[in-house]
Amino acid sequence: MGINTERDIEANMQIGPTDAGMVRIFIESQGIEVPMDFDPEEAEEIAEELRVAAAQARAVEQKQPRKR
Image (tube, rainbow, N blue to C red; front, side):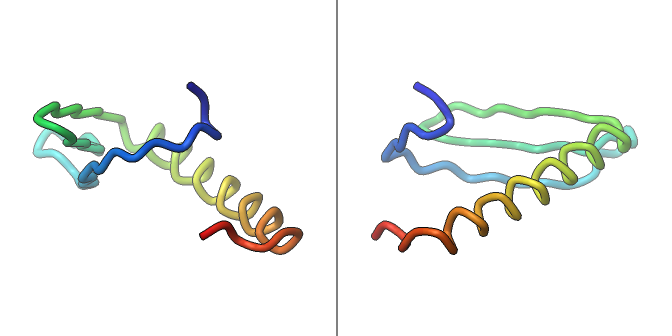
C-alpha cells in the first residue's frame, strides 16, 4: 500500500489547537482514534507540505482528465 493506492475507507479528521499549545490532527475511522500532536512550527511545515502537494496535484489534474 502506498500514497497512490486507493481505498474505500471513510474517516473523519479534525484539526485544532490543544490547551497545551500544540496543534492536533485527530483522525477517527472504524472505531480507531489517532490523535497526532505537533508544535506550531511542525504544524506550519505540514501546512506547507500540503500546499506544495496541492499545487502538484493541480498540475497533474491539468495534464489529464479527472477520474470519476
